[in-house]
Image (cartoon, rainbow over all chains, first blue to last red; front, side, top):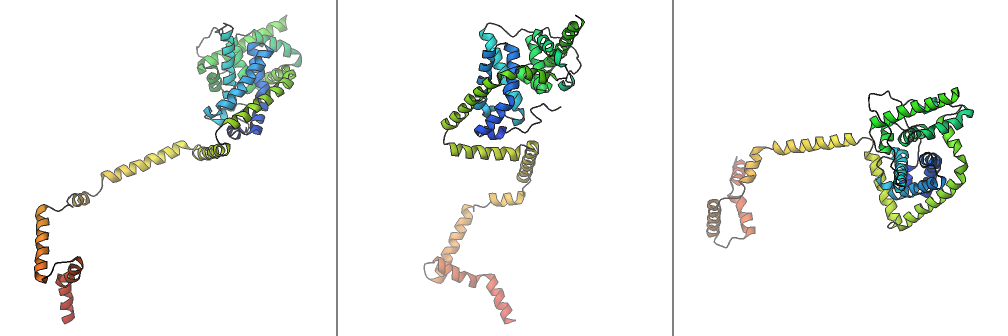
Length: 185
Length: 143
């Protein structure tokens, strides 16, 4: 399965040579999904904007460290993820660990575009997402926003593929549970 | 009906103007980084060369590595199984002191026969006349 970012032809090689137009294209492509990801984790507009800006600047300075141009998207989200963790640490809040069970789990990597939500359910979906523990939310956001494969999500979050599987499985289960409860109520 | 991605992006659409401003600031960083980096043109050339090299090698690094390994193997086999006779000749190349003495004696004998100090030119001109080949040539001429 190809991630959203991988199916595109992005001018990463040109950006590497310092071309501002190429960087502009890359920033334009990622600014909104990146902001959405960061905001849904830190829940502050000002902090999210700061983190996105810091991520872009870090990307410009450290593009030399990127080994595979096809992984630019996940690399960028990885920087943002680290900045979110730093922010949480500064506020003396560790990223809360969810109750992870690494038993044999089904692959929850179905196409995120297959999960369709009605317009009137959008607010409920967002609220349900916000109720999830941060690690599960992070995995689901990366899956929903960029359709990253398990390995990429694992690399971004700095955890094993099994942990990502678990987070996606329980995250989706919890999301469905919350939405169904609301439907009943 | 919307996908989760669409819902998430729609939810944050209002932030776009701020993101645009932020993008321009980040682009200033790109220009600044370019200015700070060592001779820009040279750097670009080096980067372009590196990029071309990467593009050339990247599609099949395993194939290139295998090819290099095969060449190394061929070289090793070639070195280990080289003709032992040739090696013996090469090792026996420096003449022994006896042989050297014998040569010196021969030289002296030549000098005495010619009645003059032997020069290189003289030896070179006279030598063919004494060699067996020239004799053979004479025989042929007589026949």
